[in-house]
Image (cartoon, rainbow, N blue to C red):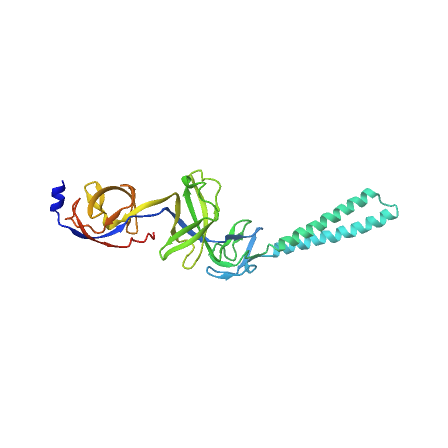
Length: 321
């Protein structure tokens, strides 16, 4: 009633205007090397030596490990002996065929045997290049799975190599499929603050089990981002901006939440439905339309309809995570 409002003493308040900010969603992500490989050999054999240890830095082409070359050298010697025999046979048949003592078919067979022997030598010499296992790119040895004397098998890793630089990988829900594109700007929330990032790759398919898809992000700065660490990937959502009010403006009455607003020279208690809490602010999902000037740190003595003697404006909290 108006006579009751006139009985309330005017009050000085500090207030902040409700504001709009981009709606964001945050997702767990992990830091991984830009390049990572399990270095293996292409042939079976006994490991003669491993030239690196965990933590060693290597350049592209540096020796990682060597296999015992005895079997390979024996194979090369045998192939070269076969080639020498095939050369002599071919020369003899060619001379006989020129004199009419051998048929063209016999010469063709000698030529085929010579070509086969040459191929065997090439194959044996190619295996020699597999004896020394070298770094496919520059980086750091992060794991070692073999020692001298172990048996190496094709495809079995000897060491794990991580290249310089990192990227961020996240598994996102299917609801975001189609709304994330390569080149899109995102933010990375770390223990040391926020870092800008750019989406570089988006998986075109969902994982059958998790119903999620993978995205890769390159950070603007990789300083203090260690492979294996976790952070949060924040993406501006498609629905745009939402309204926010300071957390210290909220008034609670049982299950109800609201704020005191300054409307002209009068306080009004307006009830709200709130969403997320972020950095000292509350997201307003439902409330009165239009602009709101909300009272900061309202005292328990404030009443709906109370006159306002003065208003001190305060800045809104910065939404930084």
